[in-house]
Length: 335
Image (tube, rainbow, N blue to C red; front, top):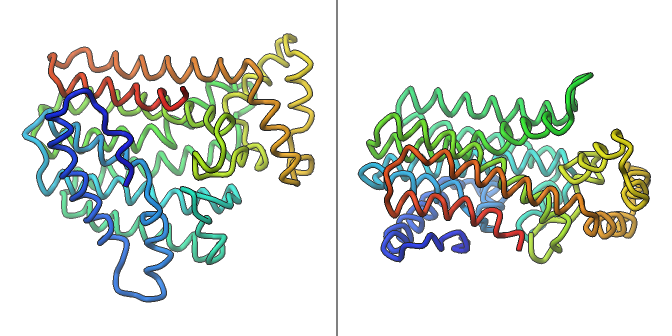
């Protein structure tokens, strides 16, 4: 488990959350195994590879606005991480991604069918766990997973005729990433006994944090190497998925303001042109130095700022400050 997400500006708060995170990690490790010697290796593959665990951390942090962590909060934290892991198995198959978290993607080791079924298995285990939290938690989880699927479908179909591609992409990010982060925050508030108004504030905050996080990832995917991110840079480009920097290039092209460097990048996008690793690395390197990357970084920072603004109704407290720091950490990764 990575502790890089923990500097929240309050040593006492961090000291309370560290053992809670360790407890959630232990529960997660138990949840991904079931005593089946054939199934347990793929099911535990991504959990064992580590990760930022930002969703469980947010659930625990949000619980500090109520009466703090309890078994329901901890189970909710495991639920959101299991759901997240399930989507990663599916995403890597769809994206043909060779690496995840510094390790071979599950489909590279066991094949597409096993990877897809493993994702389904983890979703089933998340559903079993959330069932113990009550019917409202089940409803929220189902609605969240629906949004995750809709986000992926809308990304796959692309924008409708006449729809602004940037606005379409932001909605995809809100569905694919923001919805689960929002649920992580909501669960922490609800199951710690916080006021319903606090849960609503944190839900709005979480969704915007999720968009900021994914926009930051779009930049990191171009500016960092595989050893840093644990993923192969430019995977989305190879699969024909336009992330924010590419969308901003296309926006300039439509407006007639695209420069020669940007036009050269767009000309080389596509499965055939990027079939070789050398060609992909070359396009990533050229795009990395284009000013649209700085523009995408600014968008990530703006969404993080807007997320923090959602916290305004909350009274001043170390936890509110920590939530602000949490949003900042997501985009500070760009430095």
